[in-house]
Length: 300
DNA sequence: CTCGATCCCTGGACGC
DNA sequence: TGCGTCCAGGGATCGA
Image (tube, rainbow, N blue to C red; front, top):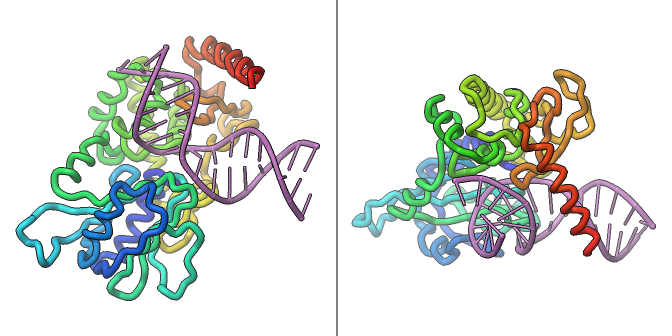
């Protein structure tokens, strides 16, 4: 599940591996997750990758102008979102293609940059000019770049649950389920707490913990839960440092209370019921939901 | 504005 | 061994 640290790891690997490479040809497999497959086939051949960046959970492969079209001086990039199971890595042409290889870019040095994605929850788009800047503007602040004031402003003015806010890419870009739960646990904030109900100290703590968690995870090349591999095909190691994520039923590292799992913002959320104090609305909400699920099951 | 529900998709876990 | 069922989850979308 590539989130900010995993995508950053891939971006750094690709920056090292494919910067300066010219794209000679494009081969597409299944294209239902590509915005405009024809645009890839039309625009990519002949272009060079000038740099690779991370933008939220997107990889941004910046492209140069085409030699035959200097009049249109606009920025162009290939956006790649890895979804849940996406892999993007350069491989030798003679290396057998993994199952679910859907995009192959033949590079000038003879290697192929391959996109592999079994579930196709990813997204690929060629964007240029206004279309590119409009797309990037949809997203919120980068948690590593935003200062405390900006972070606080985006959280405290909202009535949504803090977990939902952290996952909302138009609020904060790059955070996913794992790092949301990890930072909330470290900051001792319940995932169902409302953003507007957080105190100044809590927001400051969350901001600091989130940054520290993301930075440490980047150092360890991300978390490999099941599928994640970086641009060199190597797994990350941050999963060994998870404090709550995936630890339902196990003792809290701080207080030994049994870690619980609940659905918040539509996602599995792991938390310590002792360290992370539930908001008043939480108990009532859980009871209502449990009853609803029972009746749904009875009907089916 | 915020919510939950639903869909997309495949593979892995699990029960029998 | 094999089959069915459930679940994982980021994001888009829709109705309440």
